[in-house]
Length: 250
Ligand SMILES: Nc1ncnc2c1ncn2[C@@H]1O[C@H](COP(=O)(O)OP(=O)(O)OP(=O)(O)O)[C@@H](O)[C@H]1O
Ligand SMILES: [Mg+2]
Image (cartoon, rainbow, N blue to C red; front, side):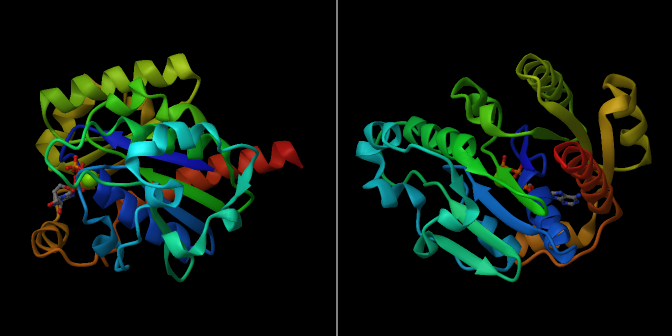
């Protein structure tokens, strides 16, 4: 299954991606984490992994990426990805599309186009999960990054902007025909109740409370090692949906 994690800036996307990937890997799934955020550089340390080289360099770098992505053809399996661009730890592999480094170097569009293309052509099998960490907001929808994935996981923090963005993403998900799941993050009892009044409750698959250990790991830039009930809930739901798909294929 190919899952894309999205939402407002700072809502907890990368935290959810790192913890969910670890949970899925622990359950004997093969996990490919794709970092498609061109700004933040810390996903690898949340996973306790080394930083992989930018995958855009495999195609000759950002300047020629638009042209080069047109040459990517056929279907790829996870094993077709060049090993020298992957960080690996246990059942998890990390692929980072590319980052912005220089003042005035141009927009991130080529990186988004590469993400879009790769998500479209990568095939995942039984017990394989591709989990995408995205940049904040919905620019990636404009570039069609979501086209190749099966499901969207929208992380919502307790704020009006986050609620409004989640509604917009749910609408886009519906237009695209993608299953869209909501995850409430950094909540306490009061904010959880208030959020549930404003969103489509049926779509909520997990609730993650404000957590001091997660906060301190984020501040110190340390690997996330905590086990959270909310992450288990996301993993259970995705595995359940995956089993349904595999049963249909059998
Ligand atoms: N449940 C939580 N409890 C406490 N702190 C949290 C929780 N979830 C996330 N955080 C903290 O909030 C900050 C933002 O989280 P994170 O980086 O995962 O968000 P993001 O959506 O990926 O941000 P960006 O949009 O910049 O990519 C981090 O410092 C993280 O440690
Ligand atoms: Mg992030």
